[in-house]
Image 1: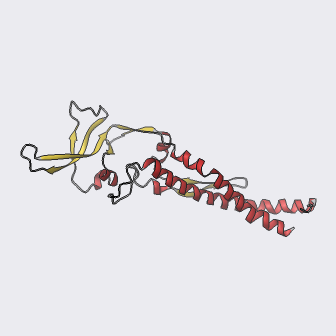
Image 2: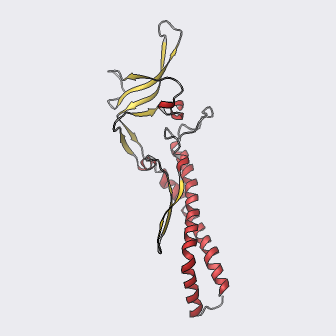
Length: 213
């Protein structure tokens, strides 16, 4: 390797400072795209516990419909000394699933899906008419559960003419367990993101500048 003079080094550093930011931003955006893919897979793997049935016609993530597909690579901000990008979901419960929390109803009761069909549809879009069935005095559901939304079917049995199939539990609050699915996705792509960033800087900054010496 040939020696570099002080003048050449000065020129290299000056040009590098002008080109580095663009290369870093491009590399970070590519890394963010990798993060989006990793988050999508981690979301499905950790949250979509009920999403593997081949009979289901729609896709959801444990009642949080659309979470896996909501991740997007976004440009957060930049200045002369810093560039930030990231993977972002507009859904408020995306972060709650990471560390866990208690969600409490502010006005209306929370609707908790109990079946695959309920997870595929919101309560308002459910294809069958749903009736409210209050929690009985001897129910083991606890004080948190107020009742259920169920649809009724005629059985043809005179002794038990109507069959109720609960679809949603109506609750005052719900405990969301921590899954650390975001941390899992991040740790799984650290080396890959670093490699993409390094390769981008080498390709777009170091090599072109070296050829100009």
